[in-house]
Image 1: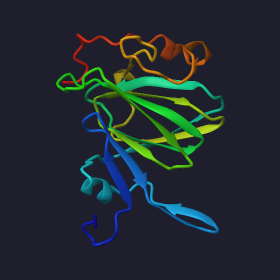
Image 2 (image 1 turned 60 degrees about the vertical axis):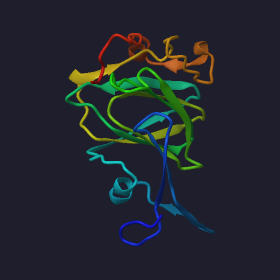
Image 3 (image 1 turned 45 degrees about the horizontal axis):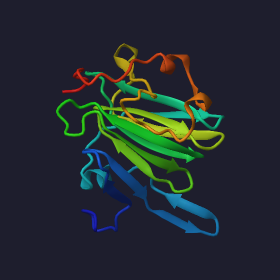
Image 4 (image 1 turned 180 degrees about the vertical axis):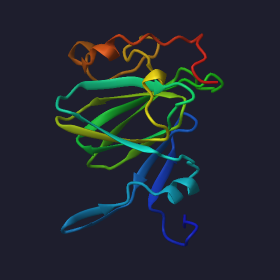
Amino acid sequence: MISANGDPPKLNILAAPLPGLYVIKPKRHADARGFFVETYNKRALAEGGIQANFVQDNISFSERIGTLRGLHYQTHPCAQAKLASVLQGSVLDVVVDLRRTSTCFGQHFSIELTAEEGNQLYIPAGFAHGFITRAENTIFAYKVSNYYSAKQDAGIHFADPSLNISWGIPTAQIFVSERDEALPAFDPATAYFA
């Protein structure tokens, strides 16, 4: 595929199994010094079907393997699309479709994101999102399409058995915050997102 300006594609954009999710593999240019990569290109994303206006960048650092953050989302009017990647280390990234009208409502998708591979996950608004670290000293980065709002901050419990998410580590060995441990279970009767 050639982009609108005639250049070869900078991003390889692949549809994931849940509608609206995309796995993105930026093209790396490597030589003896290392590599160069464009991690974000608004035009290339738009050409691949991703329309998002990112307004904030976030980074989290996790020292321990098995650190879990999630499953988080923001309610309307502050719902967020995200573009997630790993700058150092690796994570298992997990999303749950909370869009009531989706044919995949309540289903989840997981993917390993690593600094070594440089892959990314685009998550549209309407998904709960979380990740667990698979390496020490992991740095996780993500762009969001709406500013953070404590009032609209919400989540669902990462170990809810009805979601059947395999985090790859026994629950007893997962390091999670008190806040995330107290999140409510997934409720299939709730209209999280229309």
